[in-house]
Structures are given as C-alpha cells and as structure tokens.
Length: 124
Image: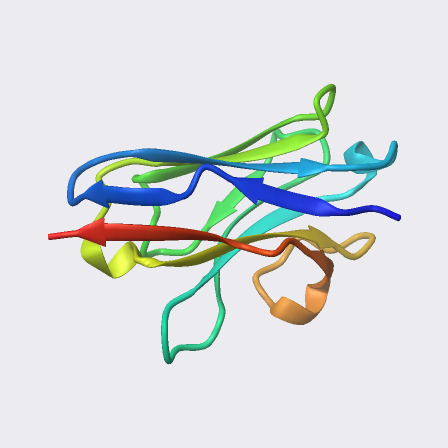
C-alpha cells in the first residue's frame, strides 16, 4: 500500500529556512502530481504548493509565492518543499498529498492520499 511520510519540520526563528521532504512508497510516484498543504491550529487546511508529474510545472499560494519552492526527485520517490524567509504565520502542520489522476489543483478533494504531517513552528 502506498504511503507518504513527511520529515524535516521543526522550530526555526523568523527569517530562517527549512526544507520538508515527503517520501512515497510504491513504484508509481512519477505518475502523480503532488501537493503540499498546511493547517494551523483552529484553521482549515489550506493549499501551499503543487507540482506536476515531471516537475516542470509548479503552483503556489499567494501567501508563499517567492519564499517557498516545491520540487521533486522521481528517482527517489520524494517531493520537497524549500521554505525560506519564514514568518510566524507560516506556523502549521504541513502535509504532503498525492493528487488524483489528471488533477494538480489547490482543492483538498483533488487529492486522495495524505501523509501524517510534520510540525513547523516559526518563532518571532
């Protein structure tokens, strides 16, 4: 059964950087677009970024555009989220997700497999 496992979260000061990783099991990773979402306490889960199957097309929420970069290595079955210039409002649990076939959007229901999440805390 395919699983997604995130890592790389932690505590960082404002202005700092973190790189999240999401490792997928199984041999069909390159067949799917992937996305990153986040959920802050008391808030709904929101879209952060997505990347198409070959990594050539990426999409970002306005709140992270210019600061975050999504990438993937299909040989390693891994998708990454490089987060720079972090702000306290970036504090959340970050989830990676696999998109349904032919989807790459920003809506939660376009994704059918989720990781367990990794906590990112940005102190001011």
